Amino acid sequence: MAALFRTVTFCFAASVHSHLASCDDAGCHDPMQASSMLSMQSLRANSSSILAKTRKDLSDIKILLYVTTHLPEEHLPYLRYCWPSLIANSALLQHADILMFTAKDLPQDVRDVFRNNSLRVEKYENPGYQEGAKLAMEMLTLDSSWYANYDWVIR
Image (cartoon, rainbow, N blue to C red; front, side, top):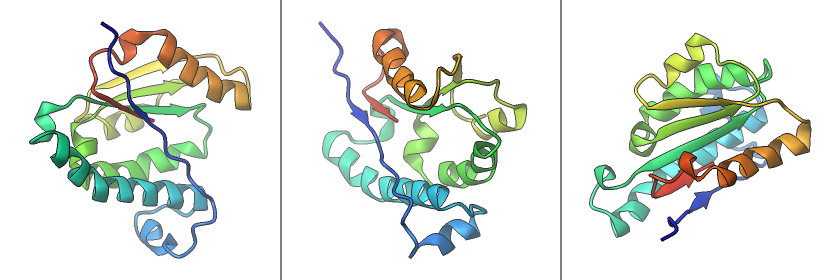
C-alpha cells in the first residue's frame, strides 16, 4: 500500500512590511526573511488547532521539515539567527525531523541550530536557479525512503 504523502509548501511574499519589526527584533533584516518568519509564526499559531483535530498530541505524529537551499552566504545569517527563535517558540518545529537539501556543506554552527532535532543533510550539485528548485522536489518524490516514515512533510 502506498504511503499517504502530504506536503505543505509556503510561498513567501516579499511585500510584507507591517510586521518587519517583529523580525527585526529577532535579528532578521531582509523582507524575504521577515515574510518567512511571519509565515512560520502563522504556522505555529494554526498548527495546534489543526493537529488537535487529528491527533491528541505531537508524539502521535511524525513530521519532516524539508529545507531546501543552495546555501549562499545570504542564507547563513537566517539559519543562524532566525531559526533558533522559530524552533524555540514552536512545539511543531521542536518535534520535527529536519532534512536539509543543500548544494554545500553545512557549517557546524548551523548544524548546532538543529542539534535537538534529527538532522539529515543531502548534498547535491546545483544545476541552476529554477532547475535546482525543481530538483529538490524531484529528489524527494523519487526517493520515497526520505519521507516514507512520516505523516507530514513540510517544505
